[in-house]
Amino acid sequence: EQYEGLFFVVDWHAITLPFDRKMLGETTYQAAAMYLACGLDPAKSKVFVQSHVRAHAELTWLLNCITPMNWLERMIQYKEKSRKHGENVSVGLFDYPVLMAADILLYHPDLVPVGEDQTQ
Image (cartoon, rainbow, N blue to C red; front, side, top):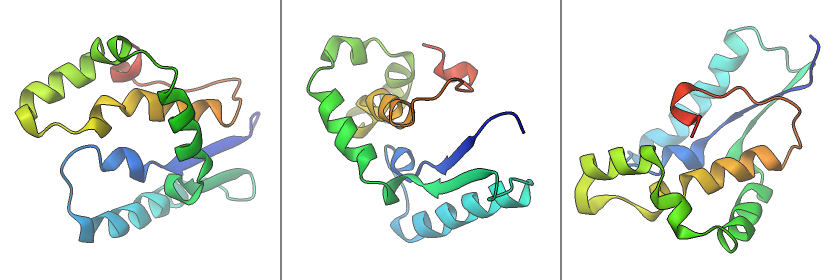
């Protein structure tokens, strides 16, 4: 009630690991529906799909051009998942933190809830 809430389905994050193309659209829709089913009021909070806002890709590209690769190489999430997936790890997984930074910076938030796996 105190803040403007932005809740978006991170469908681009979902494709950093192997995925079923046919299921992506359905799971994206289900995730948005879950937000509403949990009680988010679209009159008070914005609910949208990441890939529908091209500024996410544009800012990610700009941040990619200034982000040192060694910063990304140190990320624990990348190290753990790349060990699990071996040579099939994608550049998208490597670049995941840059996309996440773009997701946040686009909206100039005052507060960002962060999971334990994202503290680094």
